[in-house]
Length: 145
Image 1 (cartoon, rainbow, N blue to C red):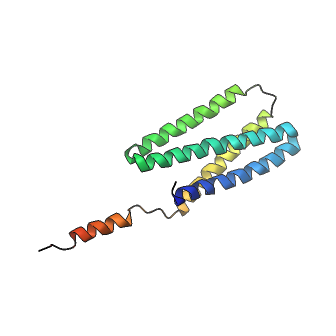
Image 2: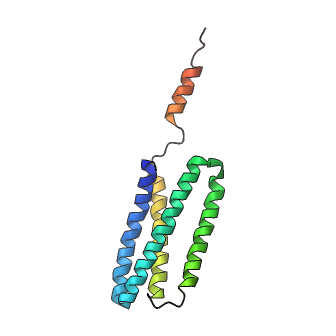
Image 3: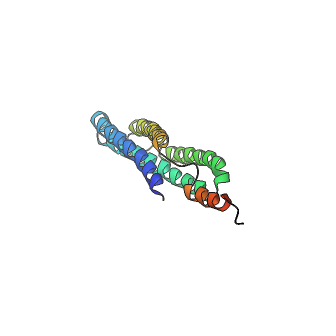
């Protein structure tokens, strides 16, 4: 993982975990221990699903750039389906408060998307590899004869 990839992942994960900590405190105060557990589960689910998605998308961009857009659409579909399966599996659970879980899941997802968008806008990612441009310029700069 390149340093700008790790930085982007970190810039998205840290605000999400901070929002999750706030959600845990609020849910714990309102719904008790089950609310706090629901908020923790929601935050962890968002960080794992969105983080894994970001890593997969970055690896696809490096190895198969022609599939980047299609992979992004497929990835978001798989993420939504994974969360839907999780919601269906734990629909009637009493391990945690489902309302606290759902609200934290929504809030953490929105924070992740906003932080990732901000990270992309602030990142100074080169569109062209400067080393390859210099090598090509040296080859075509003058004729050998």
